[in-house]
Image (cartoon, rainbow, N blue to C red; front, side):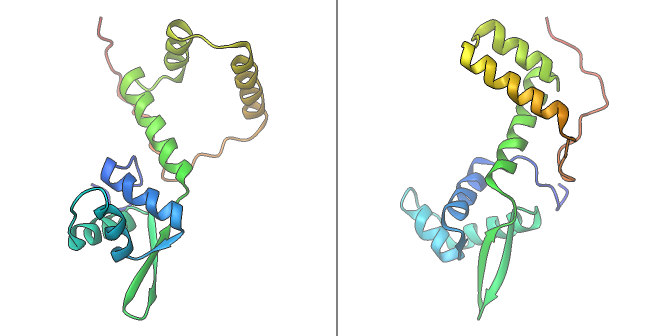
Length: 147
C-alpha cells in the first residue's frame, strides 16, 4: 500500500478519526480510553493505527514533552468523498451517471430534492473543479457489465 494513500478509511480507522474530529486534539491514551468504552482494545493497537493514519496523511502530530498529540490533517468531508468515489467505482463501474440513473429509477426525488440538486449542478458548472491531489483516479481499464 502506498504510505501516502489517503483513500477510504476502514471501519476501525474511521472510528479513531471520528474521535479526533470530535475532540480536535487527542493522545493515544485518550483515544484508547474512548474506544475501551465500547470494547477492549490494547494501547499498542491504537498507537499502531494512529501511526498508520499519520503515514496515510489523515493525522498530524505535535510533541508535548514525550507525548504525541494528534490532530486531523484532513477534514471529515475528505473521508466521505473517498467513500463516495469508492461506492461509485464499485457499484456503478465508475459512472456517476449510472448512479444518478439508479437513484432516479429506484428511489425517485421529491421536487425540493430535484431543485436543490439542479442548483448544485448549476453551481458546479460555473466553478472550476478542484480535485484534491490525493483523490483516487478513475481507472483507465474497461470493465465488463454483468447481465
